[in-house]
Length: 429
Ligand SMILES: *Cc1c(COP(=O)(O)O)cnc(C)c1O
Image 1 (cartoon, rainbow, N blue to C red):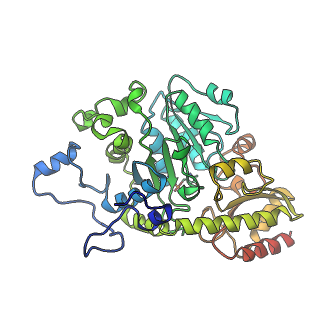
Image 2 (image 1 turned 30 degrees about the horizontal axis):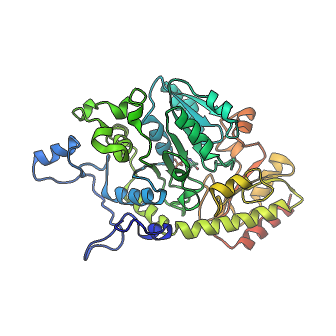
Image 3 (image 1 turned 90 degrees about the vertical axis):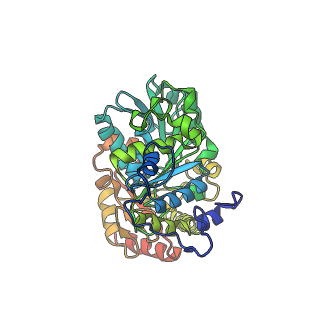
């Protein structure tokens, strides 16, 4: 946007797109796979990365780039790209700098889909992951690194364990070993936490969650802070620091600088070859969500705090996990990293374990059972029997997802209606 000093709320509403005289007020949906050029030379310059422009929507599309620019501004980054899903964002963010024979350190408290991606699928591709307890000591964290470690990964507020990551601790360890910290900031969103301000280098999002916020479009995003100096470690990051023969020997860090190298490589190389694009229609819907992100996050957090306080006082509830509660292990850390609140998701255990939890969930009327989370409509889920069902008991506990955990995602409804709904459902068990 023209004025870089605009505040967060204004960027949510207007960032990324400034229409010219007589142009559409709303972000245009450029529903075109391809783009027209006058000469083959014009197009050749694009293929050589000598000129910037669009030629095929598998790599880049103007609508997607407009919305990515807004998210880059919200996170305080230098470049961003949209992807077809949060899973694609997590995969690309790591695969852009790690390949067969490499190693990555990850917090064990991460989204189930990410765990599966790392521990199963990427392992099969020859990339090894070491999972560390997010609350491990600095010594334990440092001990996880190997000479071939290429990145560190964690979630600001983990889904569904709701652990709050000590971003500075993870950033310091990553930087001491010459690798970047990648943070999945899906649950906090930049409205509540800006990981770059705490030392993170790359941020990923499942935009499917709060950014979209209305359960309308699956999507992902990767943002680069532009701060990690790949050129200090050319042997570690040859993909960024040595010529790419598929583009006539372009070296990304030389041609695009630290501000653009990482996202350009992920776009022109990974997106070209793997093709996990977000559609312009989805990007448009995502942008509608972003326009109210700052307003919605506040209400999600208010509702979640009220629900968490109610649950904490209820005799049929075994435990409640919400970092906004003073009794919570992460209360102080959350205050530091997320003074405005964490997210709208509360987790808890119903007395009587799994059967009681299932009965409770069946009796809810306002809240619906869904795999989804972070939506305008309140929804809930039993992760051990759904999203995390590939994990055994030990892995569930390491991931912070005990068998009796109910994940309750507070929407934007009236908080008292949510509380009344929970109260009547608890009464029936
Ligand atoms: C949902 C989610 C993902 C995966 O995103 P999709 O858009 O479903 O592919 C990744 N990380 C977190 C924290 C999530 O909640």
